[in-house]
Image 1 (cartoon, rainbow, N blue to C red):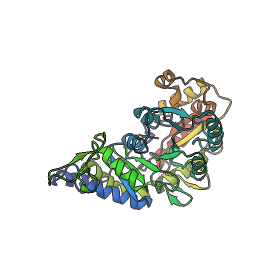
Image 2 (image 1 turned 135 degrees about the vertical axis):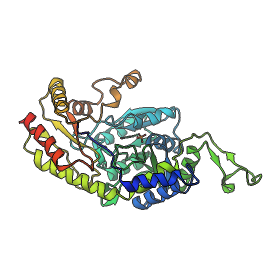
Image 3 (image 1 turned 120 degrees about the vertical axis):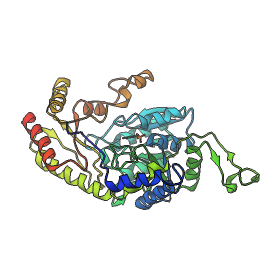
Image 4 (image 1 turned 60 degrees about the vertical axis):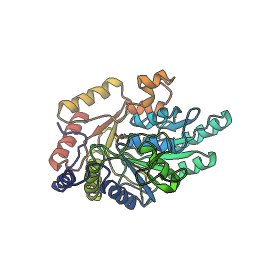
Length: 385
Ligand SMILES: *Cc1c(COP(=O)(O)O)cnc(C)c1O
């Protein structure tokens, strides 16, 4: 089976991890800050806080922004559940904004209309979390303008998008957001096995997130209350978590980061080949906005209307049966049983729901060989023509 995505681990990546294992520090050594520095340099952001997952990073970003009971977070239904769950961890409520027909990212038009009615109803969100689906940035300039108008904070969920660009600048620079989050899960663009990072240009948010990832504890006398009792002393200033990344993960992350540009270039070439080879078929190919250089975490095709659930499922199963490890990103979050219990139901976000009934993710990853990519193209052509 050709998988839809897969990490690429080089000998240098392996050596970097082994070196940590024989060094003095397995956790909290020099490599976590080194990884943070390299990522913030790449993204041209002032501060970076590494965590044990993007989910943790999303959670502490929400806490640092003051999210709590009575507050609301808006995100897209077409995302991994973690994007929405982080709001619930804080006791806040979640609501969704339907997606754009072309990019499958959160729709700016729908966002604008929903903000307008929320203002009159007194239900404005505290935070909006746009997700850069498949590696393509959302229309952040417009989203930021709307957020500023209504006094809403922004966390970019860029789990798919490290190495991508928006308006010729690296995704992660936080020009249009308070915090940007990356994921280093093995299926993502680069990996630290498990891992995530929160980037920000705000010293205050960075300091809060640093505290939150490690029990709310500090050893820095400058931010302690009163004076230090001595060299052993630390203070817990707030209720935090153990969300730390370790040095083994960071070593892999640093080594992988050195390959990021190459990875994204290969993904772009693979995407170009698909787009050229599949454009005669009765499917909708990905649409990339002219402001975006996608990191191409996913290559998503959509079966053309009119289709029914059975056609979609049959196509999906035929591809799997032919050895093509297709997937579906994502099941709309609001249709998960847990979210239905919170009051969401079928029909709430029609564009997301019709996307779900037609979308299929086909294989794209750095080590996808031309032969295997041709196999994907041939099988799709055979099944669809
Ligand atoms: C993978 C992913 C996450 C969660 O990342 P982890 O590092 O596995 O916690 C969150 N949001 C999106 C959009 C993702 O794809």
